[in-house]
Amino acid sequence: MLIGVEPEISIRVAGELLMFLPAARRVAVNRVPFDGTSTLGHLVESLGVPLPEAGPMTIEGAAADPSTRPEAGDEVHVAAVPRPQPVPLEPGRDAPSFLLDVHLGTLARRMRLLGLDTAYHNDMDDPALVVQANAERRVLLTQDRGLLRRRALWFGAYVRGSRPDDQLRDLLDRFAPVLRPWTRCTACNGTLVPADKHEVEGALRAGTRRTYDVYGRCADCGQVYWRGAHGDRLEEIVRESTRLVESVRGSGHSRAAVSET
Image (cartoon, rainbow, N blue to C red):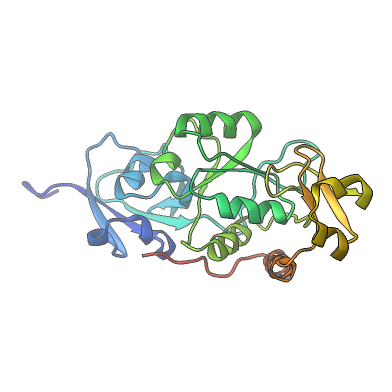
């Protein structure tokens, strides 16, 4: 080691993860000071990448976990999370459950449309979100990088995209979950059940009663559903989502994730 030369570690971050780095550091390789004590996980997060977004890591070509302490001069490579990403499931479940933060309300409704178990609150703070995600084994979806850095969180994921369409594609591309469209209430996440017209007609406007004969109702909140003026658009979302999940599951790997700058 040369006298007076600061020891460093070279960290190569996958292109999909560069969006998390400050603009000045969005380069293929970053050199960070070696202090002899920092773990690999700490160094990766110091660059701006939340650990839930970091995939397999290597040091000098050998697999390493976030608790590993690199040596001076080491070359580190950080890959993106492989897609589709497996999620530990509770017994009897064939798809993950999700919890969305306060900024993803439209995405939550679309996920429920597809039959995904999706909890959402528009008034829950970060500590409460982590508590619920852990207690109910839900994947916490967020665009808050600080929330993903909370050590107590069991499983989290950053949602890419600013438009709900892009956010949904990113979610489906990442997890390729089993879909059951038209089975959940988009308002409360409850289960939808068939409803006879005479059972719900008191909640309907006259024009709706005259025009539609097939109805569903949420078993939890009582919300009534029928195929209304937006039915074609909702069916398009379901068709596109089903095709994407089938494509990801069939190919064994995903298409490119939504990019952000």
